[in-house]
Length: 456
Image (cartoon, rainbow, N blue to C red; front, side, top):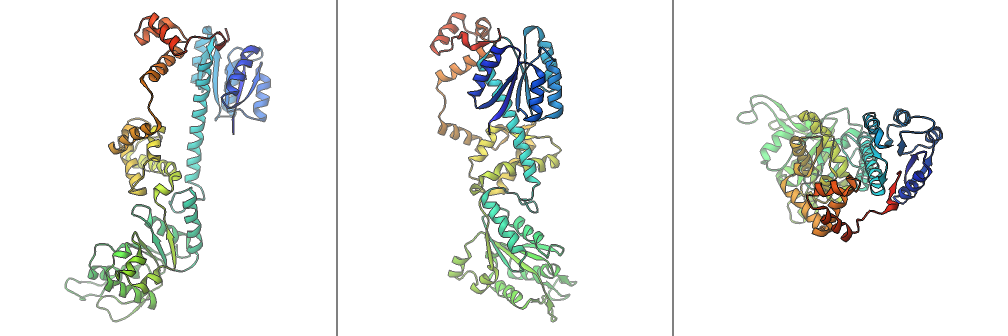
């Protein structure tokens, strides 16, 4: 949708030319010669950006600015003023105006201010949208994602959570398997009972057995007291078994028996204990191939794989990167007592083009580091890890870098716009003779055109 822009100036020629110029910049423009009709229209159909002349026949521009900011805090105002009222324009900025522009002014300056105000509004709206999304109903138990792949995952979680069956999560490391398991538990009828988790990777069978099943006093050397295992402690709730593909085969047999009989026996015990738990297993392996290789029991695979949920890699859900980034900034602001507000567009561009082999966990580590290092309110490219900073140059190479001549033209044009084409001042800033500046202006097509000057 086009942004709506209003011009309030008692000079009809100024209104006409500004309307034509800004309509060409994809704004929906309306103009007014006095303040009262504008305020009526603003109440009916609000404008996003307003150019306000300080001196109007019926009221002061500062009064209009005050009314705008009271009723429409999302709108941005740009004050139009003559040289004699610059002090008033500065006062207007203190009261909330985006910027001011003095007569006579040039069209490039007008376009630049309108674009800047538009960018500020869009950024503010994006931040509001992110905050709303982070607290919205599309997210469960801290599990964040608005992208279509994640919405599909959420839909599946809601469906299977209500059904008391075992679930297999298949995903790469760092995609949030435990968070998904907690979301399933939280959405299920078991949510008021315990949720326990255990990582099956890298442990011997004896240790896994004692941790999951517990043991009786005297069951082995060092068993000075009876210990309740994780499965028993989770009775009525959910058990999350991460890296299930790493579980030793002998231990797989015991787990299969527990699932089938719904009973456990502590190590060294003789009295079976009834067990009612949901098993949520997770792996980054292809368990079907593991079954074919004889590394995983087929009967256990089918007991666990009643419903399979595949979690997407972060590179497959890039639309969620801004959401996750905003969440992690808020998280580490609290942890580090920082006041970081956002990430720069350049830094976000790098994140959006990065493949994230470590998935969400890697993004979290990157933002944790950036918040810790950021000196201001904005995370910049320099706050990112060095390997990501190098990525910025590869992105630029893909887009094509400017030639030296184009760079020189852009810089000269910028200085000319800032100095309102005062060639004496511009040549002094550029540190080149005025004659040299004039020749380069002609070569680059930057010679001032009479029709570009307004409000004189």
